[in-house]
Length: 453
Image: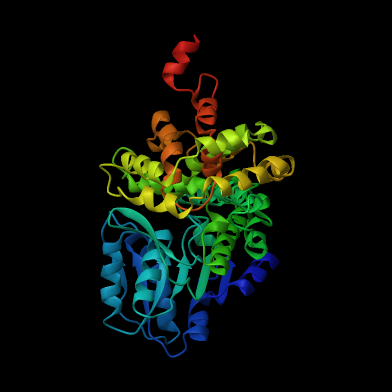
């Protein structure tokens, strides 16, 4: 285990041990006995992960004399992180006192995490793919009542990641994890903005856990795609670190920004690609590219010459904002969310003026920090392409028009301050959307292309 992972593990409030390495699955019984002495185990898997690692874990636990309840296997071919599946597992766990050993990736982990919590139990996780950062995260991301929600529940007490299993996972799962890790770049930029504008200060510990070594962990997309052991180890380490930071802060702020709001909105709007669910990482890949392109334009903008008075004059009242948000989400499953979330982060014109003065007076310094944080758009796009992740919105069934609309709608659905809120508060949203979707933009709409001919 690397030094930075060891330091992060010490800062984690819930996970007491993390074992990463090649051919370490045989250590599962030893760790179970150490942290769950005297308890019975129950392996939780789906049909695929049971064959990949679950069956071996069952045999290893049996050989070590650990009592087990019958394996719980999800058999639904459409299994995803949805609340009805939590209920299935929770109901089963309620019939005994066994500790769940979740063998799988994001879906299995989140289902076991929440179901265990509902039964007042800790659990153990055996990761089978480097597909997302939720293994060691506080909270489970579950779809309930038609909307993706984060339920508060503790991370696993122990986590095992066998690199030989993980590097042989389907390449699209590994690419998904790489994209989720790449999102920490733009999430960090959003936190820099929130910190410098006095909205939400950077937690140095959480920042260090995620951002120190992040660029190194993302440096070999080709190796990740090819299943190179070192590259995959760096990737899964980075993803585990993201989870630890969320444990430390009890918030997803260290690992999630506007790019995740795109993903959340698409989930809430039931967006699919040819009828198929899109992985979280693949949604986030396009969200990250969208926000990267936006930052690239923002870094050229003279915010040090901002007309604060004009921004304050254009700032809507809470009543106007409520009307706008309710109109925007009329006919959806979530008609009130825009009103709820924008009210939670609303500030009056006086506070806005002070915030924008901070932006204007410190723009040179803020811009330099953002520049150092970001990866150029073309490079980001190329890395996602090399790793096998989507790099055009159409790859996940998102049209350019839908993408443009997402820039408008996404800031309404979460109270977290991101770069999208900066555009609203500086009254520059339309300006930047024209930069991205106008005739010379990276996602020029077809009608703009025609007009330019």
